[in-house]
Image (cartoon, rainbow, N blue to C red; front, side, top):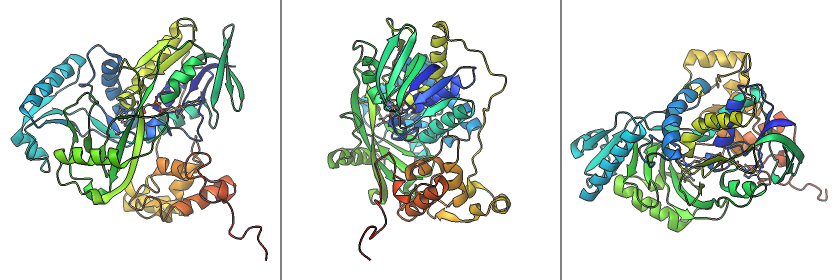
Length: 479
Ligand SMILES: Cc1cc2nc3c(=O)[nH]c(=O)nc-3n(C[C@H](O)[C@H](O)[C@H](O)COP(=O)(O)OP(=O)(O)OC[C@H]3O[C@@H](n4cnc5c(N)ncnc54)[C@H](O)[C@@H]3O)c2cc1C
C-alpha cells in the first residue's frame, strides 16, 4: 500500500514526486509510456514565463510567478540547461501599445519584477533583426528558456534516488474506492494508495471520471512548431512574442538552450494526443513569425513537431481535492504556463494532502543535487581526465552535438533508465543536431541493446511499439 500514487510522469507528476521524495512517504508514479516526460512536457515552447500574462488573482498568475523563481533555483542545483534571457512583447500597431501597457500593469499586480517599456530605437539596438514595423516592446527580464524534458527528468531522477518508485509502461484503466483506500487498476495489476494525484495531462478528465462524476472537460488544443538549425539560433537575443490575442500568447521566436531557434506555436482544437503537423498549421506559424523577424531562413528547419495543451473552459489551472472523494487531488487544466508553474504547484499540493491527513515527516537526509558529464562543455584538461577515467568518453557517437559513448552509457544507467533512442536523446542530446540522429541513431540503438542486454529489434525509436527494425535480414530464410 502506497501513501501517495501520482498518475502521469510529465513535469507535474515529476515535480510532485520530487517534493514527496523529501518526506518519509511511500510514493509511486504511474506512467503509461516507457519514459518520463513524453507527453506535453516534451513538446512546448520551453519558456519559463514571467507571469505578466495571466489574469491577476488566477491560479496561473500565482503559480507562474512562484514557479519562475523556484525554477531558477531547481535548474542550478539539478544541472538543468536554463538561461534567463528575458522576453520582448512587440507592438506593431498604435492600438497594441495600449495592450502592452495593460500587460505591464498586470505584471505589476502579479508581482513580476523590473518590467520596462522599450521604444523603437532601444528595441532595434537590442534586437537588430526585428522587423521595421515593430514600434514598441514590453521587456520582461525574468523570462527564461529551459530544456523542459531535462527539467522533468532531473526532478524524476532525484525523486527516484530519494525512494519514489516509478512504474513505467503502466496505464491506469480504472479506480475504485474501498473505505479509505483507492484501488488503481492498471494493465500491470492493482496498485493501492491512500492519496491520488491526478497529473494525467490531456487525459486528466478521463482519470477524474474513474472516481468522480464528470466535473471538468479537457479541450485539447494543438500547437505546431519549427525547430531551426543553430545557424539561425543567434537571430534573436530574447524571446520575441507578439501581442497576445484570443488564441493565447501567439507565435514566438526564441533561441533554445541548445542553441537552435524555435518558432511557433499556432492554436487549433485537436483530439487527445494527436501531435501530427500540417501544411496549414506550419504555414501560419511561418508567416506570422516573419512579421516579427523577416529574415528567418526556414530552409534551415531541422524538425517540425506539435504539442497538445490540456485546456479547460475556465482557462485556468484546476487544482482541487475532490469533495466527495477525500485524498483524490486533480492537478488539471495544465495549459501554458504549466511548465513554469508545476514545481510551485507541487509544493501546495503537498500542503493540501497534509491538511487532508497525509503525514509529512522530513527525511533525515536526501539527495538534492545532480551533476551530468557534458563532454563538449568541458575544457581540454577535464576532457582528458574523463577519458582517462573511462575511455568511452573518448568515442564521439553523435558528431553533430559532440556526444560521447560515455554520456550515452550514463543516460542508459541513470536512476530512470533510458530504454529508447529518443530517451537517450532527451537525457544527453545525442541525435539533437542537424542530422537528427540519421548517423548516430543506429549506433545509439546498438549501445542500448548491448547495455540492457536486449535484442536490437526491441529497442524502439521512442514509445513502445515505435520499432525501427523487425529482425535480421534474411533471418529464417533459405541458406
Ligand atoms: C504548444 C504548447 C506550448 C507550451 N508552451 C509552454 C511554455 O513555453 N511555458 C510553459 O510554462 N508552459 C507551456 N506549455 C504548457 C506545458 O507544456 C504544460 O503545462 C505541461 O507540460 C503539462 O505537464 P503535465 O505533466 O501536466 O502533462 P504531460 O506532460 O502531458 O504529462 C501527463 C502524463 O500523464 C500520462 N498519462 C495520461 N493518462 C494516463 C493513464 N491513464 N495512466 C498512466 N499515465 C497516464 C501521459 O502519458 C503523460 O506522460 C505549452 C503547451 C503547449 C501544448
